[in-house]
Length: 114
Image 1: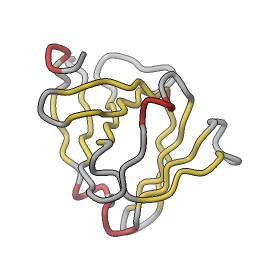
Image 2: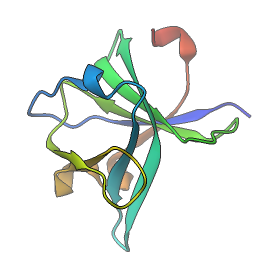
Image 3: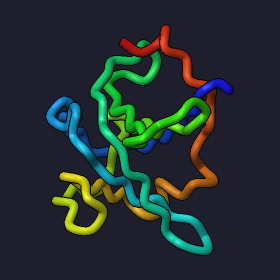
Image 4: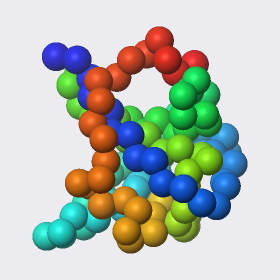
């Protein structure tokens, strides 16, 4: 089964995502019925189409598991110390910007991220 990735493109305040490379992070995702926390290892990469990104892969990732991608140029929200989910940082996007129905799920294409 081919790995899937979730691409989340939110726009506003610039943050230097390179400082989070190889860190265990959590991302709070909003769903209408409840919140969901995605926890994984962040990998800073340059993507030809998206620019600087954080590719967040679950710690015990298996083939077919999703990846979460945050774009540096599009990030808006807060990044705080993670006190609840075992990571070092917690990414909390602005409420409207990161509800899971707005995310795009796409097959992972390793040739486009370096």
